[in-house]
Image 1: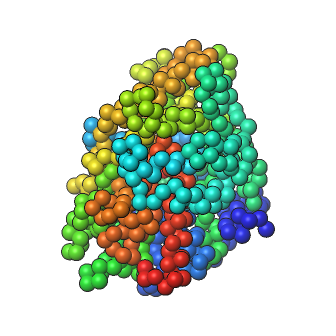
Image 2: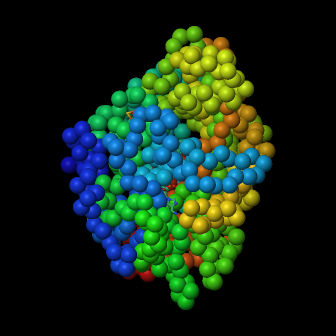
Length: 547
Ligand SMILES: Cc1cc2nc3c(=O)[nH]c(=O)nc-3n(C[C@H](O)[C@H](O)[C@H](O)COP(=O)(O)OP(=O)(O)OC[C@H]3O[C@@H](n4cnc5c(N)ncnc54)[C@H](O)[C@@H]3O)c2cc1C
Ligand code: SF4
């Protein structure tokens, strides 16, 4: 048995017969009754919720995770097709406003067991040590109540469990990866060539796609449908990396269960469980502890929708912190045309990245930085890229016919946390009669400067590689924040252990607790934060700490 298998058997619990879901495990999983007071109920079974579930099930806790979406079966539910993958996204209504409203839908969050990682791209970089103290170091952003060394053992553990493949990583805290880098396709080759010509360091990885077989998960077939759910089971998502092990250790996953409210005892001020709707019926799951992990928009929305006599402005919102400091990364994508065929779709979209511009450069007028990565839009997304330039009709058709000649790079710019970039409740209601989230977003001057700088570098790389035309589309990616961790309740919603300041047995363990975001894709950090919270809960329970 390998070391990682001793800690997490998920990859070995997937069938080895050509099918992709362990139906027996799902059929025979433990099922708790609503009236059972279980140890922990988790809202949301994505990046943060699944890791917490798996860790505490292993510790023998009576734990259940409720997810609003389905329990996906890759064989039945997924197709390697852009248009056919729409059902993976959270498409419930949301209202957007602000000076730079952020479009919701496919590019923001997922719905169903596995969460947004089911259709995420698969890049899994760590945050840099500087990300945990940007305020002290650069005078912008915020300081976390924890630092990089606090997360380091959890980064390493999760990198082994996904597992992550890549070259030795020279940036941030330099480190290696458990799997060797994948071979690169045409898109990656162009990036490496252009970067080399300019003296920019670019490396292959880090991607949560094992290089070779991992347990019963097969090798990647390099067909490029990572953002459509990876029907092959090669790309990591909690559906295959943490849920099977959690089920085998006695956890329950209750799919199609929309949580509408966290209940708090008015007398004791402690959470008592969650109200949820399943099969059209309102139900209530009792629990000793509650954790919310519903993604950066739905977590603050649920807290605000859980207002009570004791918390009239929303649960944990006595200091008006819930919903604030929500962040997106600026994510412009620049495409270059080459006479030779590139065929950017013939590889996983995540291939090569550079973090050379990640840290604050004192010579620049802006603080913090950006990362550059390969992205490989499939035809519908490519059509959006072209149409954004104003091309339509004949011109659009010509660009589409030329698809195989294009290479696309994407930047992730560290947009800064701002108190007015926030989720509030709108007057509009969803199908459960709950007020929907209104997400207001505006960029600051530093954000805009970063966008321009990143676009310039991407254009330079593509020209240096031989592109004869470049076109850029402005986009956003990766929502985090909205219920951040902080040193005290006047500056955030949870402490460094993910426990809410206001309700002693309520935890938040998803991307909403991140106070800054760096220029790194966030999933690995979200999983590491949840794994750390789980470790502290286990230790607390063993030590008799009242949680
Ligand atoms: C297109 C795309 C590409 C991405 N690419 C990358 C990438 O390459 N690398 C990376 O690191 N990150 C990437 N991300 C982001 C990453 O997937 C997310 O940051 C991460 O999954 C967020 O984790 P989470 O635990 O906060 O929420 P999620 O993983 O989204 O999980 C939240 C879960 O909660 C459920 N839920 C919400 N509200 C309720 C409720 N009221 N009741 C019950 N259930 C509820 C949802 O159904 C969902 O399953 C990408 C995201 C998208 C959309
Ligand atoms: S390219 Fe590899 S990881 Fe991506 S969807 Fe295809 S098999 Fe899965």
